[in-house]
Image 1 (cartoon, helix red, strand yellow):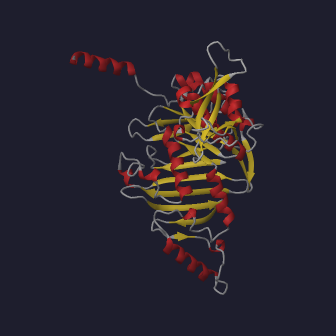
Image 2 (cartoon, rainbow, N blue to C red):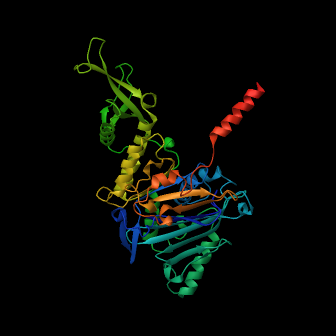
Image 3 (cartoon, helix red, strand yellow):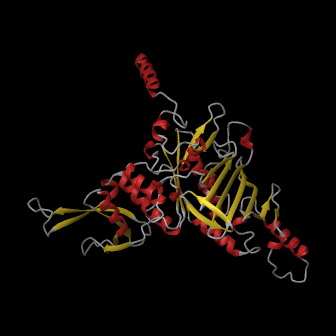
Length: 446
């Protein structure tokens, strides 16, 4: 479970900012909250959170910070393509903070342990690690300082080949060798200390990050359906047979029937030598103009879904397997603009799924940003599940706060008050004035 995510000097977040999934003391909808004991700590954690704010307020920057940290940890280095594209623009660029390191920290819990991992790195001219640290259940495991030197508690080190030496000598030898091998771009957590302390911790960390699914653009995702069964192995004439697998997913079939997107069969195409799936639609077409569709004779027309289906249908099916995976494993799914192209009733259903412990048995979590105020319903979301992002007019630095910070009454009319600007995080612009001036200038020019 994700507990806290902290960032400083990242994009528009100049000051230290904490995004928390820990619940407030709100008594209503306490059945939504995940209660779990971890290493003597009683945790009350939110299963989902929705981020609101005006355009360019910093909503996507929160998700992007999570995405960047996941990439660095899973790849074990700052030398990756995702970071290279953002050289010089990851820190706050509007004042002297541009020269300071970006600071990211994540706190999460497994069934047995609470981990807090932090990483500071500079991105001016070249990427390099300025600081890195790991705490497990409030005990420091290692700390890498600004001089690229690592310190670790002696009692954590594993004795391998140093039986006759004192513990202090043993630790000094190991740390000296470790410090000589450190690379300013490679993360210690990704491998350098794996052989020095209990490997189970690093297995848990890497397993958790594998289930920490951060999606910046769903349109870039490949189809990942896992319950596929072949319905056509090849097609074409005997002389010109194309070795293509046409497969069908039962989960997609059920979703399509419930959503009433049409009577077509959604299937997936896989070339013989390819691993990647492409989505296709199968339509029943009469043999000729005098035949009816209920006839036993018909043509199955297979068409690229991009040509036939709505963006919303394709978007939902791209996201279907990641949602199934996270609910099965108890992971975390974070999405930028999740509800783009999706009908609000589908999004409402997803919110209810994560808040429903009978379905969300493993304590999976969902985080997404949106502009749609329809989800601001006192029955749908707790106040602490609604996060607002606002940008300071003078410094242009972003800040976040939960609706629960206002200590609202349970019967508060959230949607009405939000639209009235009571909680902030609304765009302050009048496009009518801008368009009037633009058109007047063009008219005068002509």
